[in-house]
Length: 312
Ligand code: UDP
Ligand code: MG
Image (cartoon, rainbow, N blue to C red):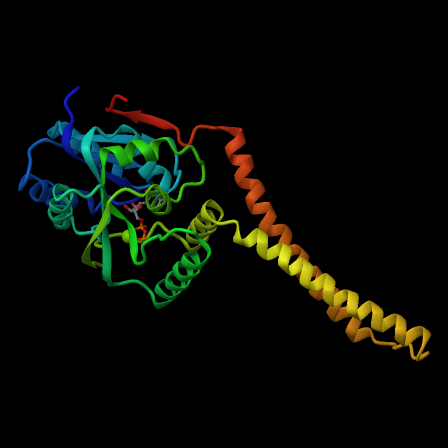
């Protein structure tokens, strides 16, 4: 197939068996309103339910539908990255498979794209059906990320967005193993704009993003785009060394001049616990950066495909 589609859609799927049919119907009716030349690429990220069977059925009945079946769960960011490597559209939309991102919005994303923008991201005006804790932590996290990165990662967005072909190609050339796509897209530049939307509740099933996975994504986001934690460590080191120096002077003075040696168990235990905590914290931060280097040096494939009906 040499001719490019007008639009490709990449959909990561992890345990979405009850959402796939409705998602497909709504995608088709939304996209058909402006073109017939499109493809849907579903990336099955090691689902444990019947998602793959559902996808397989779709592919049998519609030649515009493709699947990539991973050998296991590799995570949402990796699933999207795989889709981006295979898509053949003049532009590509990334959309969640749980109907939280309304497929109908693609029409508006496409309109902006035709107006000359290379990246059109969907910005959440609200987020229905998500826990207070999730909203609070993500708000806090994005504000911090904004402070410690040198370029702007747009607030209140997920990966639901439209990317021009040239942005997709540029993304595919970014070799890092720990992906944080929305940061990478922001880093790339190009003409970017957004469309506001009301984020829906997940239709069926439950979130595949455990707090563990969210924490991982947050660490990847920070270590991908900021060295601030490392400079924090060195500043902390300086500060604490300085304070220790003052305390040493005082201790010597108390011992030799005042002849007043304190028995002080409390001060000893507090200071050693404090230093111990700071040290572990600092080693942890450095460790995160080392583990990034390690993952990239190993140069393993990002994902393993069990089966696909796509050609690269
Ligand atoms: N997903 C995935 N792999 C995972 C977790 C999630 O491909 O390990 C998919 C999931 O099927 C959905 C999208 O990524 O299409 C967003 O995940 P989810 O809805 O679970 O996250 P939330 O919206 O709760 O942040
Ligand atoms: Mg969701």
